Length: 172
Image (tube, rainbow, N blue to C red; front, side, top):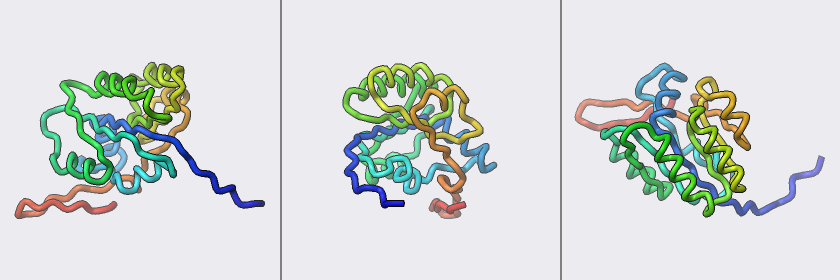
């Protein structure tokens, strides 16, 4: 069998995260309420030699970690967008706004509410990928997407709090 040819992949990718959906899925996957995505392992796996154009983490509620926002900005030029209620509508609006600017949109959510968005983006010529915890992902969402990536225990860590106000992440 011959080696794969050396091909330059020139795709721009936007990653849109439904924070509440992914956080709840991770909590049920690992059985811990302090489980979080390890972006340092997940992002390279999702990009697979493609360029990151946008990274937006949509989070319901007022208690958004400034450390998460700073980390996403400093490592990925990403941002955290607070949402009034669920992330569904803000994420959908942002996806349709940036669709003409990217080749691929990766949505981190297993929520079936995104099926119509996936269909719309694909009709506009955008490749749509879903990344989520498999057991919490709607079958129809996986079917409609161009590609599905399962988020596993290897893609998260358990956030530990220590006395003195310092926090340390521990890989599972």
